[in-house]
Image (cartoon, rainbow, N blue to C red; front, side, top):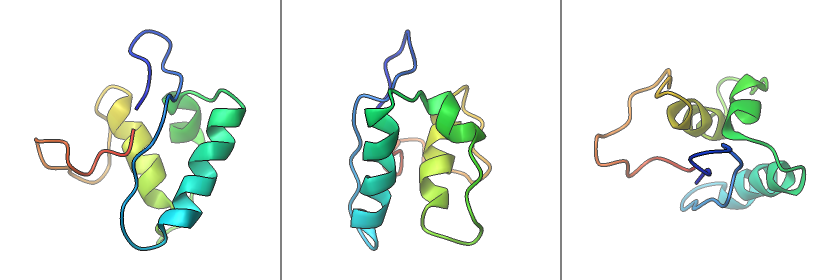
Length: 78
């Protein structure tokens, strides 16, 4: 979840495989007051679970995700 005006990451919801690893990345970003745009510009290895963080950030910033997400937003992490 990101603030609509500032784009600052407010929190994350992650359920599933490797959730602890993904949460660690999100918490680090939150500690440095990163925006979804900041995360979307970071390099993420392919193929990895961490790519989901980048995809969610891309989706949160002008709906630029490279992978498709369902319209109901169930896979959005931010």
